[in-house]
Amino acid sequence: MHQRIFYYGEKYTEIYYFKSRSWYESSISLHQFESDQLLVKFRRRYSFLKPIYEVQVKENFHNKLVILAFVFYYIKRYEDL
Image 1 (spheres, rainbow, N blue to C red):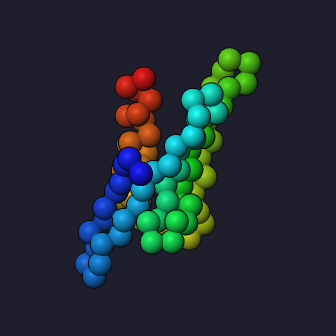
Image 2: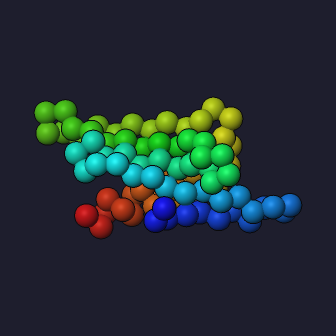
Image 3: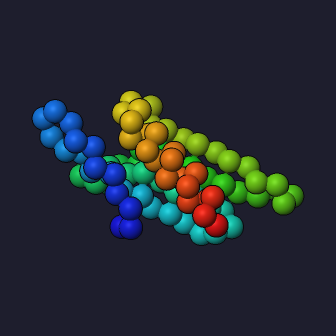
């Protein structure tokens, strides 16, 4: 685990972490630490040298602040390449 997001709620702290895959079919996903449950996944693949981006969000995951932080990390990661 390289990157984590800590969300400090009123009653407890939620911990999320990132997993990433290969360069060509690059994907990065956000998982809940306690259950290793996949919550958000970004995927970049190429079709005829043109990148195609896909996003999947688990249906009952509504923490917009965590999603926004994950999107920011994803964009920042590819800006730095």
